[in-house]
Every structure is written in structure tokens, then in C-alpha cells.
Length: 397
Image 1: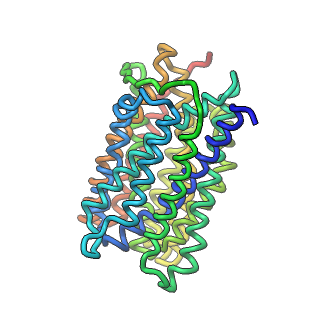
Image 2: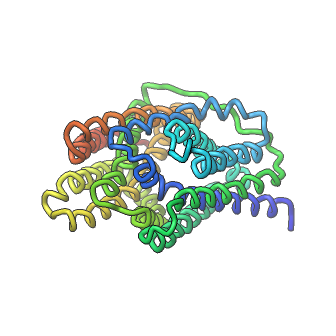
Image 3: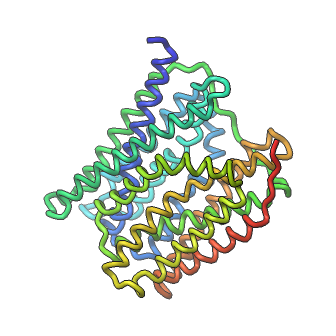
């Protein structure tokens, strides 16, 4: 086997290991917070501030480790995640009682690794690409990640669906997180054994131009829309409808399986119908989802509303992929081609400013009014997405 194929194989297996880790952690974390710490909605919203903080600082962190070879950067990113999961599994209890400060400490390790791995993974994927085949390789890596994500969430669905109801193990979350840390640690070692010539990922800078103001606005609204639903979508199902870890994992698995087919179709829709129409449709769909969350229990009763909200949760996850349209929109309005990467980086940062703060407001609204009010508030974001998308214009090369 040539060095190129060997390194590519190690990279893809490492990505798969991280996907297994991500599927297990994401599908159980909200239930873990509810069952181990008994957080209320306001506290759950406040927890998003430290959890999203690494996303805001990712450009600084990426720059600080730029002198490492890129495979060693991947090693460090996945090692952070492994430490975070291991800590959540073994080291968050003091005198047998879960400690909230330790939860945040190890959650920050996990979040930092998660955010740091994204640009490193994409940079490695491009390194293993031939000219004019970058999209193919990125798609291959994304497919590997999604496949592992499905397997990881499917594992939770099967295991916790069978054992959790019978309460055969009070340490089920901890056992799963120990397993997840083992998966991602294997990936870390594989990255370390890769041999790559490119020494580093370049430090990112920010670009701010008035010509990109609608792109910035769309990122702001996406940050709010994304985090409100990632935080409170599953939280409603868990705390108001009694959704188990197996239920949440099953929904994530369904959304991921559909997403394997939906994302390429969405990309074709962007090419055929344009970014403007695609993002307007996204806003309309989001409004319908908000109405489902806000009115479902009142109109259908608790039993039927649960199935409606599960459907809304899956559809909302699918439409996160509309970020494709924002990226292609930016490319078409670039003043300077060199603006692409730094402007995308700036978009991620302003996205995370909103992601860190808006769930705090959402938690306050839930506490003072009710959970339905959170989604009426989210419907205002949907309206802003529609109005902003209506204003965009693009030019083709």
C-alpha cells in the first residue's frame, strides 16, 4: 500500500471513530443533564454559554497551534474530546454527587475538541484531494462521518432502549461516555501515525465589508435559530413528554439517514432555484416547525403532540443543511476571492456570539411564561430569515 493510501485510510478511519463518539455524545447529553443534574429550562439555556464559547475562540486556538503538523492538530483536537468524555464518565462526582463545576470543566474540553476538529478535518480532506476533485473528497469524508454518526446514535437507541427502561444500570450514561472516549482516543492515535508534509493550517483573519452585510445577518439569525432548537427542541421532548435517550437517539438516527439523501438534493436545489428561494423556503419551514412546537399540545393533546414534535425535530435537523446556500451566496458576492475563508470564519464567530447568548434568553422566557413562548419567539427569527433572504441578490461568474 502506498503512503498516500495508507494515510488516507488512517484519516478516514479516524473520522469514523470521531463520528461514533459524536453520535453517542450528542444523542444522550440532554437526557444526561436532566437525569444527573435535574436542570430546569433556564439553567439549560445558561449552560449553552460555556458550551459554545470554544466556537467563538476557535480562530485564536487554531492560530496558537498552527506550528504543529496538521495531523498532530487533529490528534490534539480529538484528544481534547476524549478527555472531555472521559471526565464526564469518571470524574464529575464529588462524594458520589455529580458536581456542576466539573461538568462545565470537562464539557469545555469536549466542545473545544469538537469545534477545533472541524477546520482541521476539512483541511486534511482537501490535502488528500486531487485538483478539481475537492468536492468529491469532502463529500466522501462527510459520508464517512454521517455513517459513523448513524451507527453511534443507533447504538444508543438499541442499548438504552433495551436496558435503560429496566434500570439494570444506574451508570448507563457513564458507561456510554467511557466507550465514546475510547472510540475517539483510537482516532487520535490513528491521526498521530499519519505522515503528512503540509506543516500547518494557516491562522485565520477576519474580513468585514459592507457588501457582505446580508451574509452577516443571515449568520446571526442562523446562530439563534440553530441554538434555540438544539437546546430546547430535545429539552421539550425530554422534560414535557418523557422522551428517553433511546427516543432522542432514534430521532437523530432517522434525521441522519434521511440526511444522507436529503443533503445532495438540497445542494442541487440551491444550484437550480438559487440561494434566495432556498433560504426563503427554509424560513417558511421554520415558521411551520415553530407553530408545531407552540400549538401541538394545545391542538392535539399530549399523546399526539409528541409524535408531531418528533416530526418537527427531524425536519428541523434536516434543514440545518441550508447553510450550503449561505456559503454559495457568499462565494457569488465576493468582492475579492481572498475574502472567502476569512469571511466564513467571521460568520462562524458571529454565529457563536448569538449561539452563546440567545439560549439564556430562551430559558428565561420558558421560566417566566412557558415552553411554547420560546418557539413563538423563534418564529420571529424565522420571519427575519425570510425578510433578509428576500433582499439578497447574486451574480454568477
